[in-house]
Image (cartoon, rainbow, N blue to C red; front, side):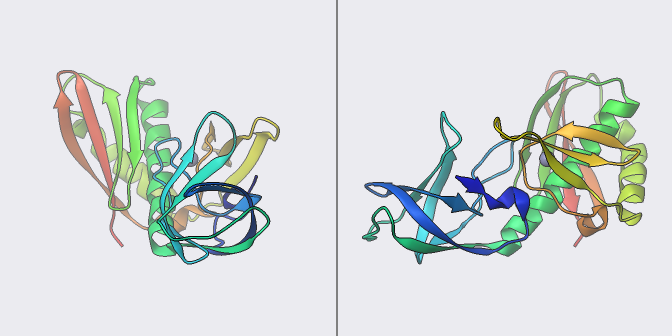
Length: 213
Ligand SMILES: [Zn+2]
């Protein structure tokens, strides 16, 4: 399955061929429809006009799409995939905002243990093992992140291993990080961000990231 969401993360429609059908679950020869991975939520959208209820990666590189009831698709059929672009673009912008914040935390604060990460449409979050309130580092994080965003720097996204589908992003002079998510092309697309603290347990701190536009 060719993953066009990597080669062109800005594509919103694609014609693909059905490769297998098992009840309401199907696979395709190529796709633009991202399935939950690395904390980034799945896309929403339709395949051949049918709502996709679930997109999931299981044990292999295949993505399995569960459609709503009523389709009569069979292997070999050509279908149009359409994704909810306003949602995907917010996910991409928040995802990269989280990448920048994580990299800044690592670079300036001695690589604390990351406990989790999640990218939703309204906000992104990063959880760390951290004593005391993490909000004390917010002025530096917000300043550095918003500086990088305002500079509108190109973001390179490439494979480091094509067969294994391992990818990375890189910003010259800032960082190189492994990630299989969908990435924006320039930091300026994110727009100004703000941070909010959430204490999620003893010695556990959460950074919530919000877009201002
Ligand atoms: Zn990423």
